[in-house]
Image (cartoon, rainbow, N blue to C red; front, top):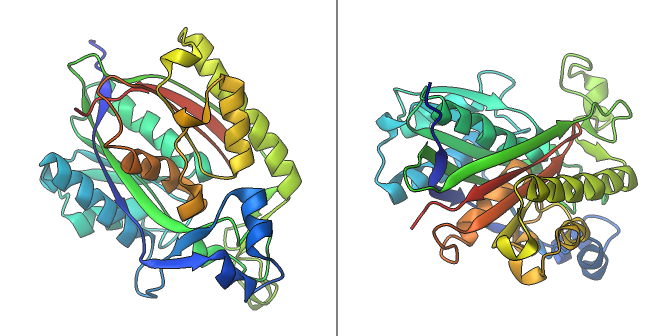
Length: 330
């Protein structure tokens, strides 16, 4: 069977209007703007304030923009893969809710959970449907309402995250561009360095779990930082070597926006200057599965057809990986 090449043909995004600055956080906890900026690079993050809107709404808005920008109707979409750790419900899948919101009546849809690596995992999975010929148009979405699982008295986590969504459309490439390679890893985090303690089948919701604030993100910051720095940098260099890419061959690094120090370490390991690194963490914080597609959206007018991009991420699980692609939008 002929193996096809998958490429990104459209990108869309959604960001809530409300900007929560570091100065806003100063009112909620023992922290300050300088402390946050010097340790993370974050100045503000977007928060979805409307209580009637959640992850599916943001994902649908990003999807609609991607569809509109490419002149694609929702009925043409064969598959929707949605990466998130903040689904509207445990079930049904948030992807199914998005399918309904955008009118993609001919698609099948499912969620994928790999934390901050979710979009990369979803992009790789979607590309395989194109490569095998099982789908012609795949909608890949990264969307998270992280504010819904944050404890705004915990400065180790709440300063980091924001809400947002990004989406891309995958189609067959006929011009030599597209997704050429991917490397993914996972390692069961038995120490629970980055997790949400309650809400699953292990610790179902009770009065006690709510009172003990166990439905929020918790992390061992030092352990996660050490693992993330090593994982993202190693896999980014690995995919370069595997594909015989030198630093001068790489147009852009598209890193998960977790922490400026992690991003800098990854770029340095790859031998890339800061001018080749997409950074918007200062404006949006860590939007989990949405960081990489939001970068692609913000830089879409600066990208040239055929540019070599390395996408890299690290997330809870632990999960991490990298994708090598040639930009296919003219």
